[in-house]
Structures are given as structure tokens and as C-alpha cells.
Length: 158
Image (tube, rainbow, N blue to C red; front, side, top):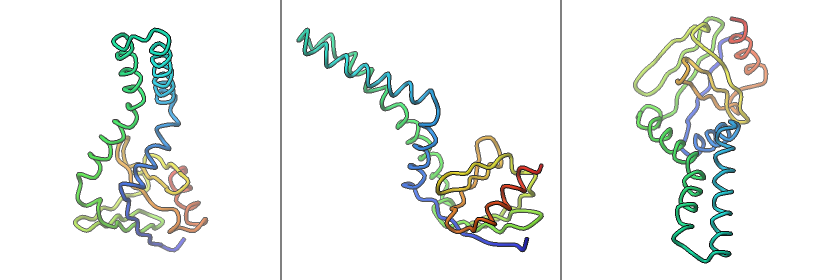
């Protein structure tokens, strides 16, 4: 395939939506959130039946904490990701048969296809992992179906 180029600017809002979609696919976060809702419902029920606020407050606080755990984790991830000023600007990706060239405002990197650990396809993004915790987000609306298939085939053919 001929080399092709796409440019992506990942915004905080888009990244937040992506993280919520990913995090709520994990059973741990689903269970924690359900547990939080159950605790809050039990706390409200206890308050209405027992009418003692002092015994109910710890239950309500625990429920609220469990509901907020996913959001707290997402806020930490967003802060860590966007502390890098280079990610606040568009990033250009050049794909060829041999490698991927990633060009930012202050840096440029070339990865051979063997450097890509895994590819994850989302509704809006193609996420190319260069390590277990580092990835490049590529908007799918800038790519054709053939280009997406090409990228996925290069990574799975390792």
C-alpha cells in the first residue's frame, strides 16, 4: 500500500469519553459502581425507616465514594496525559509498509511495525499501543476502511 497520512488532535473531552467507554467494560468498575448505588439506596432507606442521620452518614459516604472511584481514576489519567504539552497540539501519523512516523510539534518518532504491541479499535479511534501503558490515538474519521484494515493487518501479522 502507498504511504498515507492522517492528523489527530485528541481533546480532553474526547479522551474523557474514551476512558469512560473503556473503564465501564471492566467488571471491577461495574461492580464498584453498583455497590455504591446499593449503599446509597440502603442509606436512604435506613434514614427513612430509622430516622437517625448519624448512623446513615458513613453508609452514604461509602456509597458516594464507590460511585466516584471511576471518575477519580479518569481525572487522574487525564491530568497525567495532558501534562505533556505536545499532546495539546495536532499529531501527524505517516503510515508505510515498513513503519509509522509520528510527528508532533516538538518531536518526531519512527516506529517499525514490530514496536506496536497491540491495536485496539474503538467507535471513534484506532489506538496503537507502543507499550503496555503508552498509546497513540488515531481518529478513524481520517482513515478509509482499507487503511484501517492495512494497519490492523500489519500489527496482527507479527
